[in-house]
Every structure is written in C-alpha cells, then in structure tokens.
Length: 336
Image (cartoon, rainbow, N blue to C red; front, side, top):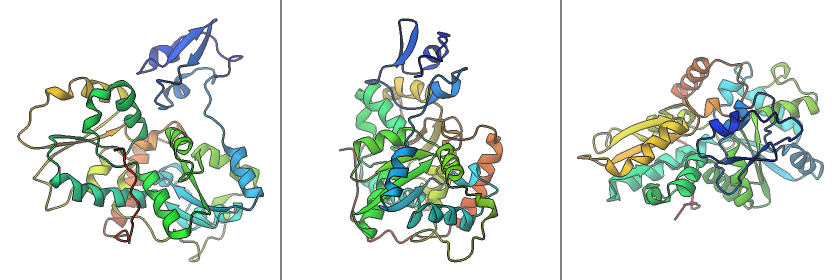
C-alpha cells in the first residue's frame, strides 16, 4: 500500500473476500498472513494506493548479468495482445535477452494428463482443481477443513517450470509473464523452479524500456515456441477452459464436472461443500477471477471481457489436436 495515496475510503476493506485488510492510524494495510494474493484490492482502489509488487528491476538485473532466461508465457497473452502475432511476440522476448519462449499452457497439458490418470483411481467423492494458486491459498488458509479435496498436483506454472528445467537445465531461470499476481507468491516459495513472475502490464513496461514495438517487428518462421505450441491447455484462462481440456470421451460420464469463477462464488461453494450429495464423483474447476484468468489484476482492463474469451477460445480451437511431447516428464510437484 502507498500510504501517501490512501484516502481512508474503506473500499478495499469492504471488497476483500477474506477480510485480509485492516485500518491502522487511518491507513489501510494488508494482513499478510491471511492474504490470498487475488489482487482485487488493486482493482477496486479508486486512487491506486494499492500496488502490485514491481519485479521488473529484478529481471533487468538478470538480463544485465546475461543469465540464461526462458519465458513461461500465460496462454491469455492472445487476448491481452490480440494485435501481436505469435512470431512477433517471441521475437520481442529474444530482443530483450531471453533464449527461449515457452507457453505455460504446456504445463496445463501435463496437468490434464495427470488428472485423467489420477481421477479414475481416486476414491474421493469431491475434487477441487489446483490450477489457480489464489484458490489454493484460499482453501489452505481459510477453509483448511476441506483442503483434503484438493487434487494432489501443483499449478500449471510450477509444473511447466519443472518441465523446462528438466529439458534445458537447472542453470536456466524461468520467468513468468501473465495476468496473475499470485504467481509472485509461487516464485517466492519455489525460487528453485520459478525465478521471477511478472504481469502483462510489466511486459508493456519492458517493451518501453527496450524501445520495442512488437507489432512492427519482422517476426518470421524462426520464432517458435519451445519446444512446440501447447494443445488443449490453451483453453485454461477462460471459465470452463480447464474442463474442455480435461474431459475426454472415455471419462466424461464417470464424473460430474462444474466450473465456477469469482471469489465470492467460490467462498459460498466451500462453505457448503461438505453438504454435496452426488451419485458420481464431482470435479470442480475453480478460478479466482470472474470469467477466468483473462480478467486478472495484471491485465489491461480496457479490453472487453467477451472479446478476450472469444480470442482465447478461437486460439485453443486451432490447437485442440496438438499433442505436446509430455510423456518423458519425470518432474511432478504436488501439494501432498
């Protein structure tokens, strides 16, 4: 919080779903021990007193040190930067000093494969997705009695980070770019996997710093995602997208699959989850941001939500037949 800007309006206090903001000496401050890093207070603050931690200087230092860097790029980039083609996006990162650019959605493809194998063997009646780290924090900090329902796998980002390090070597630093600020918490707790997490707004700042205008670059066939494009994991940043990639013909009738987004909706579900009665196991896809990650706190809110959903969906539809090479992956991070 920027205390000089805070006007004691209490809006962030009223809006915080988990009551992780307090007023001291007329100023709002975050209670770090129970904060779930959703970023909602940043969105609702009328005077921009709440700030997202700026990790751009940390990355610039790594670039100056000529570290080996690989990007983990969130799949919602296609909705955040619809005017920039894939090859030009990749070229912009290479101009800044990154050796490789990969899609976080590859980690989602791996997670889909893990869940398709795990769910039929598990006797638990209720399963909560762990794709959203904010939701996981909400469960663990505020609804610990239902944490047993969390599936035992990490987020697509940490899975992807392990995947990249396994392929490229531990001397590479994985740098995330996306719409989410709870990824910063993941980098703090798993620095051996994820060196730095930045937002799409940070990416705009970096382009300005390096005087890069991605839409004007040449691009070309030599600029490709490492090791390849992601497949159905590309659906993940929209509400219901995880289920589109997870449900297959042989398992669609074995479970009830539901998707919910928005912290208030999720809070209501968690409050009554033990009352669920079902003749089949239930899998719940839960995303903290309403509508999905495309509306995360690290995005440009000027873009219409519907347009974002359509752009992600169109991109994913073109890739749904892609089968990334994930069978050789031995690294799996989990919450157990």
